[in-house]
Image (cartoon, rainbow, N blue to C red):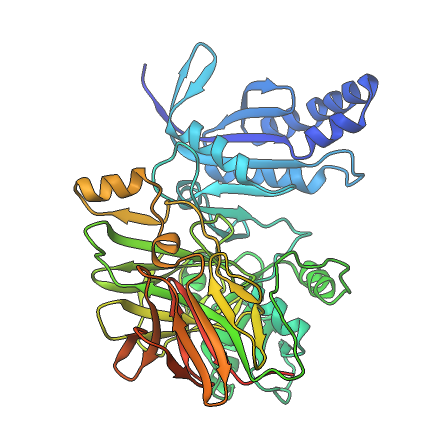
Amino acid sequence: MATKTLTVVFTDLANYTASTRRSDREGLRNLIATHEKLVPPVLERYGGRVVKNIGDSYMALFSAATDAVRACLELVETIPEDGQFSIRAGLATGDVEEIDGDAFGDAVNLASRILSKALDAEVWFSQATLLCMNQSEIAWEQVGRFQLKGIPGEVEITRAVPRRRAWLPEVVVEASRTGRLVRIQRGDPLPKLPPRPVLLLEGFTPGTEALRSFVDRLPVVDPACLWLSTFIIPPADRIEWLTAGRGLVIGEPIAVDEALRETNRPSSQTGTDTIILDVSATAVIELVMAGLALPRVPMSEVVAGYTYDLLSDGRWVNRSDAAIARVDVSAEGVKLVAQAPGVRVGDRQAVPGHAVALQDGDEIGTAAGVVIYRETEGRAYSGLMLADSMARLSVAPGQQAEVGREPNYPGLALPDRRGQENIRWCLGSRAARARESGFTLDRALAGRQQCAILPGSDGVRLVGQHMRCPTWVLGPDGPEQVNSPRLVRPGDLIIVGTTVIAVREPSG
């Protein structure tokens, strides 16, 4: 049977499981009836054909990608916000084969997987759907790149932006919270700018001479700090703006206003990350987790290359769908791949999914703050991704402070990154054995008790404690292996496995 190129839509009740727990049988029947009453008419009004309904989910086929996205947008925009339920949608475009009233094909599988990642009241779709739809009719923005079950590689996902919603990039959120956001309406004079400003231009029409003229009159600012608030933007104007290294905030003015107000409302949430801190009034030194060390590859005929993902809270993890950036290390060098909008390398915005080769001293602006890439010489490491974290340990005279995966008290515990999904393996039996035995970079390069810091009358000494996993100190010629006790001073960088530890003066 011949296939057709169609857009596949899956919708479901985003909070269906929670609703069933709270409802009796009558309430559940009413929920399903309301869902069935609201969804099919909207899909059909835009030319969609409902293929099947499985309780809380619909599958429909559309001949036009634009109509499919518009139908889903209407669903999320018109469902009553009474807390009873919300709709989410996943879409993909490609070849579809219809057999006995059902639909099959890669596009069907992809749409289903995208739906599984979509958030409440959001419309997420594939790159093929984006390319097929009329981008001048629909407001959209990139969500990021995801690994989807059963789908090879990573999938770039986009979302449609409803008129009542605006998702602010983390750069804009942080600037708003710290008083560095400068909102400039068309026609306003340029106000006095604070240090490290983030400028949000509002009321300008993309691609117009008025916008170009205003930008030309700005003082010298980092292009990555210039953001344009707009809603539907033609593709050519979008490309022109982003190619210049600037950013976009997609949303209607009222929605952007509300999103900015929301960023400045007090939050009652508390963080869940562990902060290791041994405060001592007599501390002589402070150890601070200060970034990610990148071992050189190929490594021992086992690792041909690897990646680490950066989260918005500053943590480096093996792999995450919530990553904002990814560092990729191979024999050719170190590259950064933005996983979400709002990441810059130097003075340019990084395009999600596109690799940028890093050079010594590059500043990487992210939602987690600025990360500095430092290239290193020597056989052990390719470079360091430097940014201080909140994990730190104050060390007082007479104490022996350990560093490792399971250090004795008082100690600084290294991140426990599990899994092998970030490793590209070498060929051969040695790599196969390592993979089967559970090899990871973090566990292979650092021990449970890796090294110790001992303040003394003649200074602070660093002592290696592990027979097989060396400890390093960054010297003028690159990382130097610690083969015997050596003095360390504030400003030194200690490298333990894949973790950088900065030696600092006590902070308090």
